[in-house]
Image 1 (cartoon, helix red, strand yellow):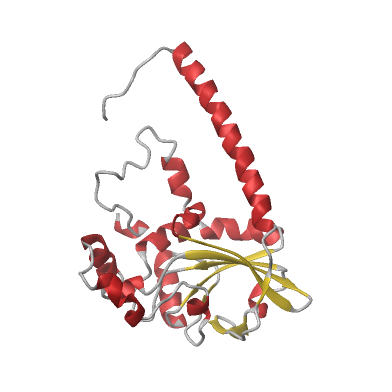
Image 2 (tube, rainbow, N blue to C red; image 1 turned 90 degrees about the vertical axis):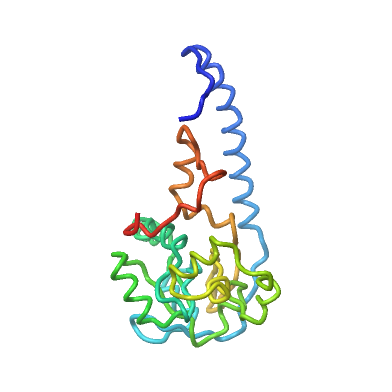
Length: 240
C-alpha cells in the first residue's frame, strides 16, 4: 500500500463532508445530463435489418419483444473471433441481474454481435449467461452504427504495428489485431412508436463504462482503479 496522509476522525469527517458537497453536485449534474439525453432528437430507422436469434430470424422491431424501448450492448465478438472480448465479457457478467428490472420498466435489453449465432450461444454456455444475444452477421447493422469496420478501413491505424496489449487481446479472442479492432463496444438505445423504430442514443469508449459496475466500486476503493503503472488487468472471470 503506498504512503498516504493519515489524520484524525475529525479531520476525516471535515474532508468527507466537503467531498460530499462535490458528490451531490455531480449527482445533480448527472440528473441534468440524463434529461438532456432523453431530449435528443429521435432518428427513424428506415433500413431493414434481420437478426438471427434463438427463436429464428427477427427484425429490429421484433427485438423489442413487445416493449417500447430497447437497449443494445454492442458486444465485441467478430466473425473471426473464437471467444468474446475479455473487456465486454467483464461487463456482461452483470447483465443477467439487470434484465428483469429493465423489463419491469418497459425496456428490453440484449447484446448484438457479428459472430454466428452458434458461436455466441456456445460462449454464453461457457460463461453461464442467460441474457438475450443475437447475431447481426447477415446485415449492415454493426457498420451503420459505427461498431464495426473493415480491415481496409483500419489499415492506416495499424500500419506501424499493434501495441502489445492489442496483440494480447486479439490472441485471447482467437484473431489477429486487425480482426480484433474491427469491432467496438458501444451502448445504443432505440424506441418503438406506432410501428416505427427510432435510434435515440449511442455511447462509445468510456461512455460505455456505465455497464462495467466494478469500475464504480474500484473508484471507491483505497487505491482506486490503480491502472496507471500496471499491466492491462481485465480477464474473463474464469481466467483470473
